[in-house]
Length: 223
Image 1: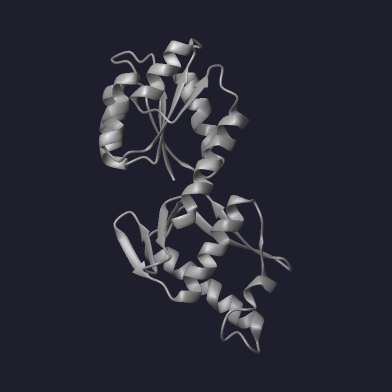
Image 2: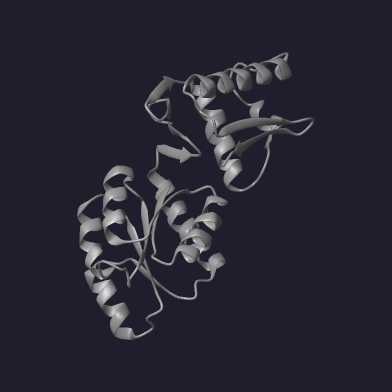
């Protein structure tokens, strides 16, 4: 999930960015409205964290632009506590309003809740430098795309789900795959090996499938 941070305070911008990167989000940041528009056209964010008091434009006046270009979820970030400020933001189309100073754990839970809701009908998932489509069995990194087998896309999705919860994919969870039968450890090892090869083929440099001996496999996302 792509998140664009539009905040002119460089220190706060960097703090939010680092906190959300650790949660597995893809983060882009801008210090003013002009940069925000340029990044939005290119990256198509799913969520925009939008400060009101920007150096070149009021954040309010960017809401309509975002709604017409990708229609991301817009969360206003402001030190303005007045009811009038919140009223203007909501009337212009903002989805939420957070008052500074920001509580990072609250922001994380808000974003995770949005992500969880969006997953109900989701077929395309993004993590690190890859994107995978569970409907069309495609794995993409930048402009490179390869097709995966059903078993490979299923394992990748399970690894991704475990990654979001900081968990290991237990080998026992893979035994129910069709065709495992005898020599199950060898078959699992082969399946993981082929998935790693596919990640290499598309040029991923950030996704690692780590083998935790005696336990299972873990997706690691390099920064």
